[in-house]
Image 1 (cartoon, rainbow, N blue to C red):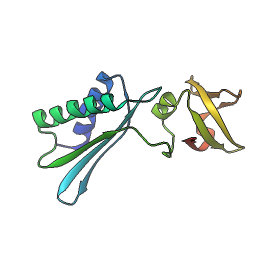
Image 2 (cartoon, rainbow, N blue to C red; image 1 turned 180 degrees about the vertical axis):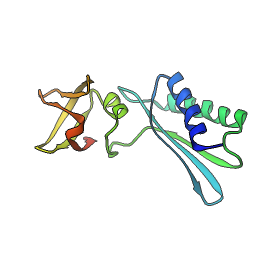
Image 3 (cartoon, rainbow, N blue to C red; image 1 turned 45 degrees about the vertical axis):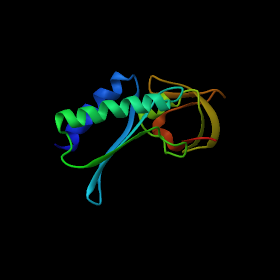
Image 4 (spheres, rainbow, N blue to C red; image 1 turned 90 degrees about the vertical axis):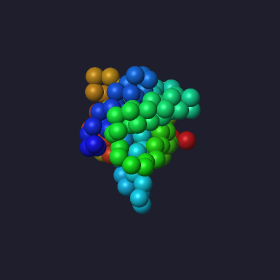
Length: 139
């Protein structure tokens, strides 16, 4: 089946677990295909949640024969150093300390909220995500 078919099923499963799909990549590694799924939620996703999503995705792949042949499934949360840019990134990072570079400044602050298309930080900054040149979780 096509990448879009796999994506559609993965999105549904992730949503059933009340998680956010951060990224999905289906690629060839030697003779084996690899399906890498990154999930998260505000407050952080746990190991048990990743395991549950992994079991559900594997069951759907086997039942619906979504990936022909051998494959490896990897389900995890994104790392701290990952670049933030999507709406799901902003939603999941509420309450987390971010390193942000905009067109006019660089700062480190805790993201209080993402609402109505704006990022609000604990230090009082309000930023349009479109002006963010780079953002990552701070250690």
